[in-house]
Image (cartoon, rainbow, N blue to C red; front, top):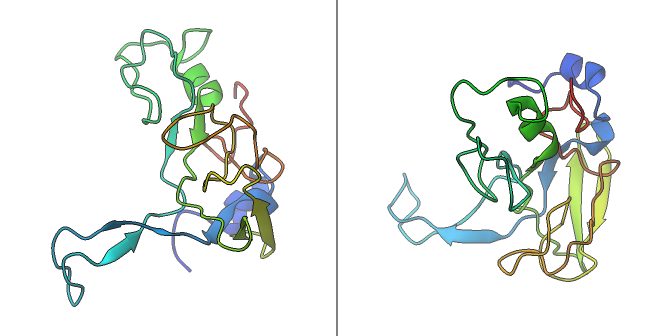
Length: 166
């Protein structure tokens, strides 16, 4: 296959390949607003399982110009390092967006991992989402219980990060 995820990247990453999702169970979350090829307007579609790193905290430093559940945008001129640095925001205040995962099989979402294994992630609170570190939220997660921790699902902004300064 072609693309940015290579064996070399997986072999040198801090995140184990057994935690990197490739495919998973998903549910249609929207409808096409216009026809696309042979697909008519109104056809249901499924979101990609991984959106992008998004802010998982409702309170972020003043130099971050975006909010909760959005990709961080840091003010120009912000230092890279330190407690107010942009790298700290990316390392500590973001998580991967896995809201596209859906538990279809008795509360379990089957996920094909980069190492070839298939892992069943349990939606233990039945809210329809696999929580990988987000707080309770009336729109998505009904509790702040982590259902897929870092040893089950790679959740940081980069496969070379473990939520620490690099």
